[in-house]
Length: 205
Ligand SMILES: Nc1nc2c(c(=O)[nH]1)N[C@H]1C(S)=C(S)[C@@H](COP(=O)(O)O)O[C@H]1N2
Ligand SMILES: [Mo]
Picture 1 (cartoon, helix red, strand yellow):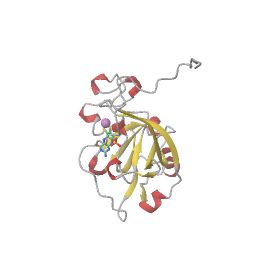
Picture 2 (cartoon, rainbow, N blue to C red):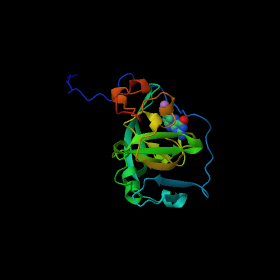
Picture 3 (cartoon, rainbow, N blue to C red):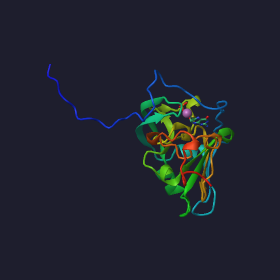
Picture 4 (cartoon, rainbow, N blue to C red):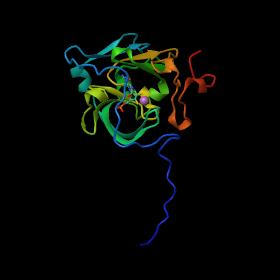
């Protein structure tokens, strides 16, 4: 056999992460029941028009979709590699429901008041999306059916399941885990796990 030396690849696993067996499911609290007749996704806060946007389930589920393949890094140190997600990119949503020009941050709200804040630049990244499908099937109830956020370049607590609202913010505000000691930015490549690691300017005053 001929041995070939391969060029070194970019590492895919951020520092301190490992690949477990299987694909864990984790979240705080219970799995909500989806009620299509009353479900709405709101885009609120500092919108460009000043008005709140509302999508019913038929409206949201008919928006154009894109597909990504991305890795998923939980702050508890497991990483799930090469997940295929399809859904509505934040780019698409921002065209229909744009933020005011001075919006710097976004709060993503899930059922039961779970939330995560991200910077507008992280929200607008090309892979950030509202996923409706995982592995070419509707997302399962425990993974966020019908719509979950996927922000693959940040720790997975920012990937809010059971999304119900997007709030455009002029000033940064901490979400559920960010208020409980987790890092405001959450970049796994910089191991931004905990709020005590935050440097000046990385969190709300
Ligand atoms: N609404 C909601 N979304 C959530 C959470 C949660 O508790 N509630 N947990 C987050 C965390 S910490 C992780 S690691 C991922 C887990 O996603 P998975 O169950 O699909 O692996 O969901 C994230 N999204
Ligand atoms: Mo997590």
